[in-house]
Length: 151
Image: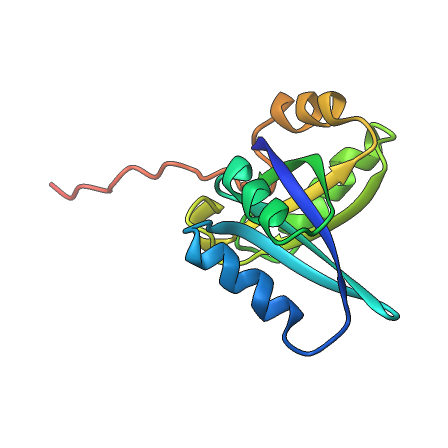
């Protein structure tokens, strides 16, 4: 688990606007770890976690696009049923509100291919302590079996 900078950009809902934004990011070699697009009428909101937030901000400034930068949690999600649910339950137990969340599947930093959840919470430091306290979110205990030797 780690914190990261997420950038939110509101785009006019017209064909090609998202492609233009992503093309400009690619041209400047700005990669991203997670991305989500949400529709809200005549505008859409693009939220993404760039690999280099400073370079992404330069691109957005050059495109004259207003943006917001927010700190979010990146949490490894185990590749098993209920992996993300368990993370949500742990946060709820500590009365932490998830403002929003989205999931990046198959990320290079994900727990054995389970991906990474991007989570915006009402108290980032408390959420970090909660999820770090017991780093076994979704992990199953494995028993060690000794081989049986015949004599």
